[in-house]
Image 1 (cartoon, rainbow, N blue to C red):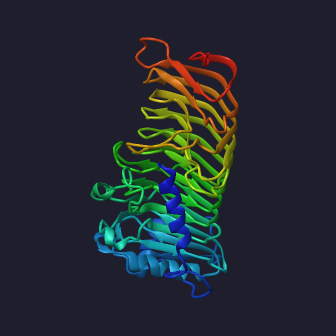
Image 2 (cartoon, rainbow, N blue to C red):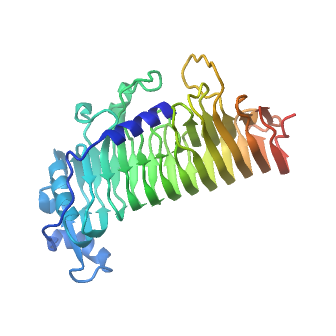
Image 3 (cartoon, one colour):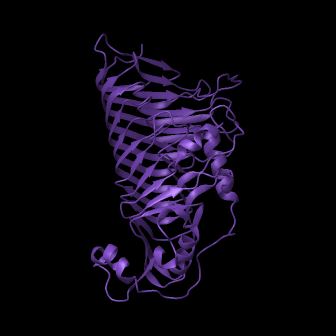
Length: 427
């Protein structure tokens, strides 16, 4: 996914005001789930005692769950009540199919110490694109402390009907399609055991979030679906993603500008474009990237494995430093290890200057498996600011066809090599 789109998303996210806020303040309590509510949730929520937790079932607010009726109003009403409650709160979305238009779940929920969304249902997005703003999300969570989203439910973006309208691969000023699930300016968020399928644009986006933990997430879209990044992270810190299965049409995970202390472990990626840092260096005043760890992941049939991409002609300086990629298995991956500081996805580019993004202190450790291309390691750094302290340790990559040994290529870098090196280091 190109940084121009990522940064445009950030600008769109930041421009929202508090119009349509559904939360805040204090208010009514609702404890009675009814027979249906307890049937679905009572036995699974035994850790809550007495009236210490409030329960808000979207069906009690009018949700039909028939897959045909727009249930957006019921979702908004349930959130409004939940956000105005006191203490620990549970918002319940029972099993069923819900047709939902754009919905924003917005805080702050001033008197709520913890809010858990138990999503068992199957949510279908409206396909009427006129209902979405440029770069808006389908389901958004904003300015909420202590949110947990769990339950095994599914967000279905019905993206196939929207993908033909995506002009972003060719048009820098394209109108952005909606993201499936978006988290903006959140703190202490847990996302566990949810599924996202066929997003119109990104599946999940984090912008300006702190202390985010995601695990057991399943993401799926066709390999040719445009710009359907699995999880995109921007201007966020203390993010932990683990034990998730991602197969989509763009980056499985993309780490944009302004991120720090991001840890990614146990991700199975494919199809897709691998796990990417960037693209970086497209705009002035971008934030640095630091403290990234990607460990114990598997790439299968992806166009890239581990990729770092920055634009030429950078209008300002930034840095990506202190990053470690360790114990990554590559299965028939086109570009297992690639640094591309002349990144340009358009058909024609006219670079007038080098990238001004400084890459340093980057470690590739225990990278093994097979490459579908003859050049398995590409380190193409900026001639304006050459890469510094790039380490390759115990890299063992074979050509998937077994016909010959893979090679490596380097520009503007003197990498440091430790242990096994297949392909051989650049001359």
